[in-house]
Length: 178
Image 1 (cartoon, helix red, strand yellow):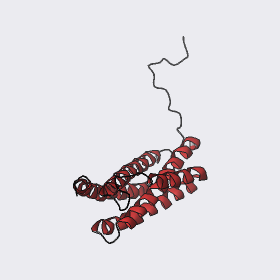
Image 2 (image 1 turned 135 degrees about the horizontal axis):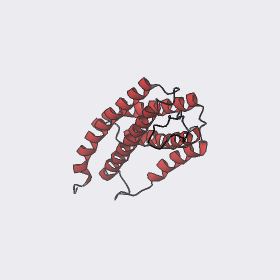
Image 3 (image 1 turned 30 degrees about the vertical axis):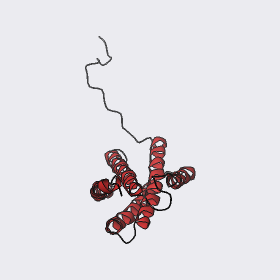
Image 4 (image 1 turned 90 degrees about the vertical axis):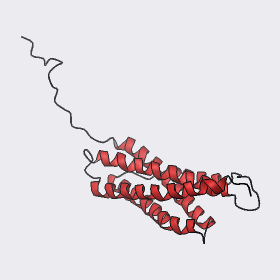
């Protein structure tokens, strides 16, 4: 008689655990993006100060900065070290993006605002995906707070709606002759 289990028999599940080295890379990449995102949204709010867009994005900018702080807290709780070179890379990339010409030299182009909203939109979508990923990991990583992640995801979705609304509004003025 064969004592080995057949391949059709259910195998006991091995306990799953989180690969913190891989998660560390992932979260540091998100921190790099969060750093660029904070810089980008603050620059945009400053560039359009006094406008309805600035009034709408001011609270979003504050939340994006809070989200970056939340990410740092999550990393701390997981014992994941911050990779400073990635933070610096995010900061530098955002500054370099400002050098891109958008058809005008002496004053701000409406295309600049449109493209900055587009970049912000992509950043917020990426952040939401990150919160979703972490939320899925709560089953195996007990140091992750499911309620915090749900709250962060809901906030990212609200941010997406605001940014998308203003992105759609700016589309017309970005391409008007004037």
